[in-house]
Each structure stands twice: as C-alpha cells, then as structure tokens.
Length: 205
Length: 188
Image (cartoon, rainbow over all chains, first blue to last red):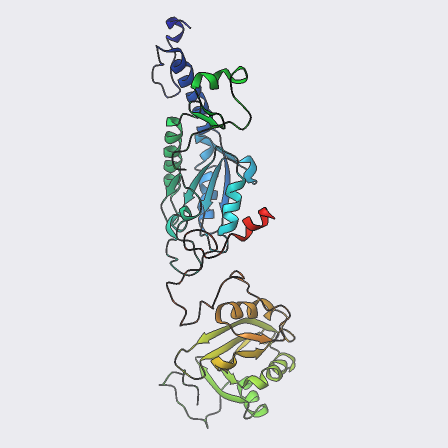
C-alpha cells in the first residue's frame, strides 16, 4: 500500500489519517469505522421502573429527540440491544432480574445509569433499595438528577459516544489461541480468526 | 376513653354520645366488644375487640344504615413499648352514603393473629398480605397469606419499629447472603 493512497484520508472525527505503517494505517481506519458505527447506532433497552421514566419518554420523544445523536429505536428485548438504560429505583427484589436482563444482552454492550436512585439509591437509604446499580452490573455512564434534565441525558450520551470513539474494537483480539495481531484480525478468514473471537473493548472488566 | 393514642386535649367524657350514628349504633349493638369510640373533626373511629371483628364487619357491610361496601385500606401500627403493642386498622367507605369509619383492633405481640376479613370484603386479600409482609400480623383464614412486596427469603418485618434501620438483606451484590435464585435456575 503506497503512501499516496493515504493522502486525503481522514478519520471519522476529522483527524488526518495515518501515513506510515501498513498495519497501523489499516487498523486505525477499521477501528474508527467500527467505533463510528457503534456510537451512532445505539439500540437502547429501556429498563424503566419509576418516575424517571417520564423524563426518559421526554428525552427520547420528538422535542429532545435522542435520535439526532444516534440513540435510536428502543428495543424491548435485551437480545437486540447494546445500550441498557436503567431508569428508576431498583429494589433488592428486582436486582436479580436486572442482572439477568443485562446478561442476556450480547457484547458489545453499555449501561447508562439514569437518575439518582439508579446511581446511588437516591433518597431511599432503606431495606428495600439497591444502593447504586453498579453494585450489580458495570455502569458506563452516570446521569445525575432527580430526575435528570433532558440536557443532562443528552450530555451523558455524547460523553459515552466520545468514549466509544476512543475505543479500539478492531485492534486487540483475544481467543483461546492467545492474542491476534491487528493484521491477522483484519485479514479475517485467511488468518487465525476462529469462531468465538471477541474484540476486547471494555476497560472495566 | 381508654384509647391512649387519642389526643389528650380531646374531652374524654364517656357520657357524651358520639355524633356519628354509626358509632352510636356500634356502641349499643356491640356493648362491651366495641372497646372505645372516638371522633376527631368528623373522622369516626371504633376500637373493636378481636373476637368481634368479623361480626362487626359483617354488620357494617350488610346493615342498610351502615352499608360500608368498600374496604379502602388495611394496615397496622406498631406502638413499640405500649401494651398491646400492635393495632390493625381498617378504613371503610360507604359509597352510597358517602361515609367513612375506621376500625382498630389492638393486638398483643405474643398473639399477633387476627381473623381475615377476606370473606367480607374480597379486596382485603392483598391489603392483608401487605400488612403481613411489613408488620408480621398473621391473618387467620386468609386464602393465600404470603409476602407481597418483599422476597420469600427476607427475614423479619421492616415496618416494625424495632427493625434495624441499617439492616440490608440483598439477594445479589455486596452483602448478599444468598445465591442468585435466577442464576440457580440456569444451572439446573
């Protein structure tokens, strides 16, 4: 691949493309393409339990319209979704259900904790309420507020997208044979990719 | 009046007849078993002996002058340190007559059993389960007396005044003493 083919190439966020090194050129482009596709195509699963649900309806409705930012149609099955919005108070009785639903989502997946009750238990410091859902499932972004303003939710969504843009889904790959290089990953079927290969993209588990 | 929970400033003259015809009716009809009555700004309350609860309830529902056809709420109060410690409270509404009355039944902690009023008002089913769940009052004759809000594994009754405020009984997560019942199902 000659240097000339890289001229004029831009990353999805506008940075100039790489100009040297075949692997790095190719994989950074794949990374960006994957990250770009992911961050603008959230399939959300709303796990709505309480009054924050009203704010959720507001923020996903036409007035504030998270669809503009790529958080599109709600999927009401976890198996078709990659962004779980936990909206409202979670009780200890419900905690195993929340965990089970999260486990049913396929990777890559993210969790948005929506509102003070979900973040910390909120005002409900009592026998019934989970004191923050991050004691049960990993959380990627916390939206404070009781309930959060729609602007706060959109801000959180944009911050989550910024994080996704920095992730490198195409690069480090691990399977039972060990790590694959980016080039091996990119060459796909001719390389050592085997079924069950999972890109490592999360930094907290 | 013998009810120690009443406002102390209220006149405690037993000779004054209550203004509510329902209370007057109860006092004359169930003398000795209606332990006390009180009225406060139009709210009529009768304290009833446990043994007479079903009879009083049936009368309140079926008598044309009472016609309390709707049971609004069943709950309990924990007067920790007092004897009897508990009181079960019934709120009744007559839709036809637009009248309300409250029935209270004192219960000792050692004998926390009361007849279920589900045969009289079917709507008592979940209300009594809630009271059982949160206070531990057992309703004799209830068709399905089990917890309604909390999980089966929960120990104790959290609305009792001596339930430790800081006590947590999570099913999963930090401090959980039990395994996740849903994940247990997966392994079978």
